[in-house]
Length: 163
Image (cartoon, rainbow, N blue to C red; front, side, top):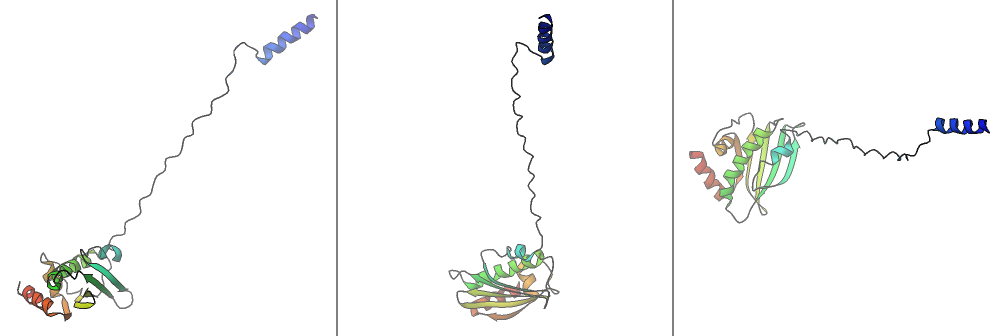
């Protein structure tokens, strides 16, 4: 019997019996890896970015043939509520900003200005002749050939050419 008691005692000591109750291990908090969002690389000088330079004017059509003919053709639409002559200066000014923004410059840019269904102005700018100035309208005007204009726009352009 003595051997039995000694054996039970030894067994109890080896298995670590005690009055304390072990708590099950609590699950560790889940640590999520920090997500680093990559910001898209902003392409500067793209055609899409340059088109944003046309303010209060809707760009209706774009033909980018820089790789084949070195030319960009734009058709823009202006409001019918305001005189076309008033808008002409803004279109010339926006064209300067458009040219300055483009990284890959074309040889020429043709801008057709529509008011409703009528083309009130069309000009082609020779980018090699273009020299940025404070007077944006004059800078584009001096590097451009006017191909079509309504009488109202013609009056505006005559006034502008005197400046």
